[in-house]
Length: 116
Length: 113
Image (tube, rainbow over all chains, first blue to last red; front, side, top):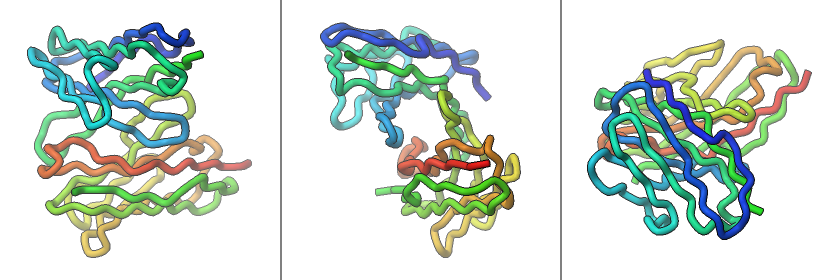
């Protein structure tokens, strides 16, 4: 299992500013995932962050808007840049357990972002 | 590609009622199947899982059976409580998705006392 600490848990930000969300894991993991969960909707994968390489972004998400850092095997950050009200969402970091075919995901408690 | 379809919510039940939340999937391989739960204001946590056909996952009174013939993994509970109010997500993972989770849309469950 893995314990994930994510912060901040919530924030209210002005449009045009940026917010960096931090995710700390209590064990070393190869891949970390960043999701967005818009109000009343399911999870959408933003990107996969591997240590030592650039993050891999899903369709519709770009590095300039959501830069990600992965400096070591236990830590990652996601920045939401130049925010607009449409960026208001819950942002979740996640890691997946080891074992082919039996992965289970562990999540941070999420960051509830409101852009005004 | 792989996909997961869940029944739309919200589902509203009275306490002690029987619960079924339907989940069907499409996958080319032999996926593992999961139910995650998200309580209000919290992140997601694994509720139960099944890794092969006919397996039954169970936890906290919830059950789901991996039915390959109907490509389903319906979540059931015999008697729900107010504390079960949450959003429930069905998900799958397999080799074709590089073991990344494919998520259903989520079903909000509301239990009234």
